[in-house]
Length: 291
Ligand SMILES: Cc1cc2nc3c(=O)[nH]c(=O)nc-3n(C[C@H](O)[C@H](O)[C@H](O)COP(=O)(O)OP(=O)(O)OC[C@H]3O[C@@H](n4cnc5c(N)ncnc54)[C@H](O)[C@@H]3O)c2cc1C
Image (cartoon, rainbow, N blue to C red; front, top):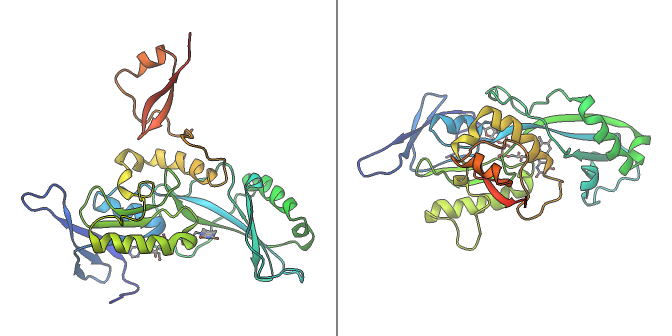
């Protein structure tokens, strides 16, 4: 049964003798109902972190500003044109409503509402930061010069949630048994939603991740409590969005939120000219510079 318009206020858990972790028992809805549940899936989009926190489940997603421009219609546009991406100009371009859509993934994004997303926000638009985005927009429009001639119909800014490492948060949480997550879709949720749904359905059915899919990079249990920190989320989300069109290579180090965790011998390693990388938040020596 699907019940629409009934917000989930809380996911209740229970822990009996012998259980290592609490397990899901029921959900409470805004209609005042308590619904018995063996498993739940938190797919609450930009609200997923807040709902997770109520059950001590770590989902460190953070909303960021995400932009696209829609041009006026013009006759040359063919709706069958494919999506074209030019990551060097931070833009993807596709037909939309008789004109073109220019979607932007700027090199450093901006966090939106890290204190919490209002329950009442839905399909909303947020104020565009024209000063910050204009250099990106100009470059993007120069990539498809006809957009400069036909003009802009709408410059849209909406929030989308990003995870600290830019991969989605999928699967059973490390904190509560049978509490599943499908959130943090990093602005490609329409593209990836079908696959994520299939993987998660099989995960719940079998009680373990599907054997034919390597879920290491998307496993919701990889996130830890220190990443739920408000400052951490605010600082990291800009880099996570910026990485969408950045050059990726193995062991690419993160730049933001460094020093979240330091070992007792950190200063000694610094004294030996260590260069560090982030390993689960720990500053870990990557290599040493000779004297
Ligand atoms: C400007 C913009 C352009 C984009 N363009 C693309 C694109 O071209 N291609 C692409 O693949 N993706 C795109 N995306 C991203 C895509 O829209 C998202 O990744 C996707 O919608 C996320 O899906 P979701 O199910 O995680 O979250 P949502 O679609 O936000 O759904 C979450 C739902 O959970 C509900 N909810 C939250 N809390 C509760 C609660 N406590 N109880 C009950 N319900 C709750 C919300 O009301 C909402 O309906 C774009 C996003 C933006 C902002």
